[in-house]
Image 1 (tube, one colour):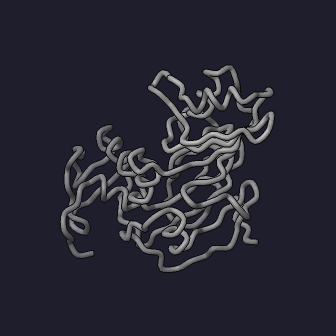
Image 2: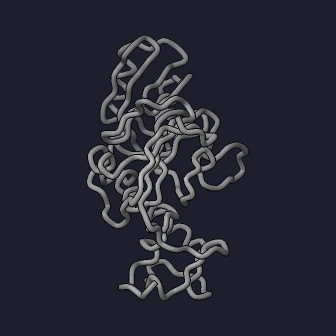
Length: 258
């Protein structure tokens, strides 16, 4: 590959499918990235095709095509690329494409529903950073009956340990069921808001991200999105990595096409 115009290291890593720019900055700051044999610094630039970038001992190269996968995450699957202290299947292990993918945002272990995997860091940034106000819709089954006062309290907003939290919209759709829309993705935010009001979720399912709904996929199934779907349902495509081949058939997490 011929040398190209220098780019910020975090942008280079994101374009290679390592993660969102924010996550890539964290990896650089933690000293896990080297450029030409030296530990990289936040804010550093690299020349694609000329500089050698490694992370955790493996060379990082830009992706040749953009891949976006929608997954119906089962309960007890971890929304991560690497295991930490928790044991269990990783969401990236449920999808086999031959591409290096990372989760866009997260769902906690007990939660289910729509997740996206991609190698497009720019897309991930737009879908997860609070400044872009991308809506995520959740259906919550409560562990005990709740009246209109719960909706009123949630609509007013809750003060959590990491700051105020307020759904963009909340609706009671049954004595034991709520529908909430958030535009940020703090850790276990829905569960913590409910806990602050003396409630808890018996089941929590994400059913929508932006204009993309969880439709046509059973638990554990996944399929690749077309560029047209990404642009129409998830906003304008980043344009940095374009899909060159498509396989949009539904697959389960054991790789069987349907």
